[in-house]
Structure formats: structure tokens, C-alpha cells
Length: 99
Image 1: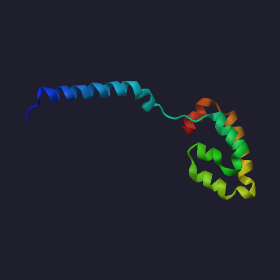
Image 2: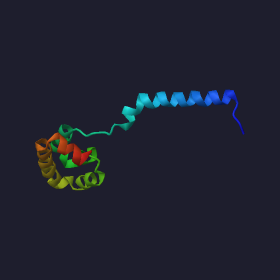
Image 3: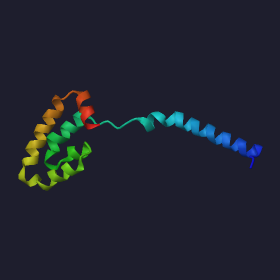
Image 4: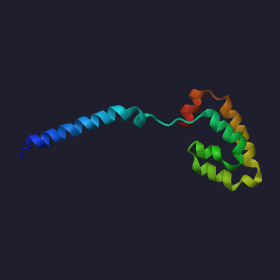
């Protein structure tokens, strides 16, 4: 089974197009999403009662636990202190832990 010149040309054009798309969008596709330390800290301080910072950091189970117990005000205190901890962390250690 041999390919005709027309089929070969079509395959070459598709490969060329794929290479162009890959080179154009590879930085976007390969970049990992990083979380903002400041955003996490502000969410923890102001919305820590509801665990919004846990959802933001990709820990939905902990966020749900915060939601279940928000009426006790304990998650609010914990969230406030977690926000302070996030502010005191270096950017590198925060990124290593939460990205």
C-alpha cells in the first residue's frame, strides 16, 4: 500500500501545522498553575470561616470540613492563623507546598 503524492503532501501539511501550534502554545500548555500566597492569606483571614482558602489551594475535603463547622467559629480562628502563616512564608516555600 503506497501513498499518493497528494496524500503525502496532505500528511506533511498536517505535521507542519501541528508543529506550529505546538510551538505557539507549548508555554501555555506546559505552565503549571501557581497559587498566589497573598490571595490565599487574604482568603484565609477574611473568609476562613467558610474554608474558601482551602478550596483555592486545592484541598476541597478540608474546605468542606470548614463549611460544616463554620457555625462554631473555630474555623474562623484557624483560618485567621493560617492566613498569618501564609503571609510569613516565603514565596518559594509556599509554592513548593501548595503548587
